[in-house]
Length: 319
DNA sequence: ACTCGCCGCTACTTTGAGAA
DNA sequence: TTCTCAAAGTAGCGGCGAGT
Image (cartoon, rainbow, N blue to C red; front, side):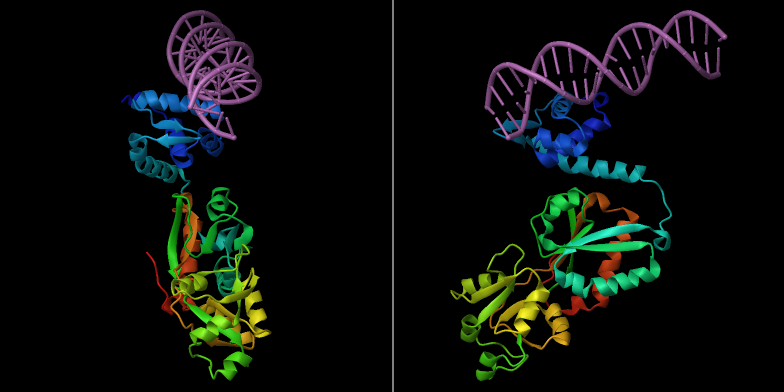
């Protein structure tokens, strides 16, 4: 190959094409027109003596040669980006910035108040904005820089999204204190709700997309059982309120159940079945991997999660 | 040694036609 | 709908010679 024929812009085009698998979208990502990307692709084809991408309908399918370049090209660009990053003596105390997080109200309720208070003491110039999970697709929001971090259960995300497991979040069952059906059956707080009763009672569910089933229904389904979800609400807090004032049971993260039970008349019970609870993860754009303020704030979140004792719950921690 | 203007090259844009 | 390819025009850059 002729290295002289390769300039950095062509490498950027190749990287964008590998990400987007589309000439038009690759151009949008790096600020070029579609014909310009097409021309750049042709120059790449000549320089590397390979077709690199073959059109199949509306897709541009990478050749094995192109696929083999994906990781080294990405790593090289990250290195270059790092090399050109201005060397700043990062000091949280003087940092002026707003961080935007996204996640369930579970986090805005449990994590954000102590986290923001703690950060305010060491980095008074920082502000935080917490957006609801329903706002949209995590990869897209990260790519458009509309959020800095997302806190979510395992998601299908783009390959350029970095993530780390935060903590396991096993489900607990909550019901109103004095729930008549549980009382009649002699089930007391902390005990397991019998399976038949669990399936017979009405359930409330936190659902951001209106879906009336969740992890619990999947687990029940595997046993050939079903439950009656009669109320789907977009926030855990709303679910807790509904449970406190109604006949519902609800499966919610244990950490949330414990916190909600401090302020609402609800009791915590154990589920009659094992409900898989994948680890909650923190997601961010890989281009922020080494950005000092971003890395610092991620470290602070991990630290705060540890301080809150979330990691002590015996949920499954993924990789 | 430096500046200026010209020239050629390269890559960009928009527009449009045609193909998959 | 999205791609390739082509044409026409524009802009930026580097090389080079002439002038100061």
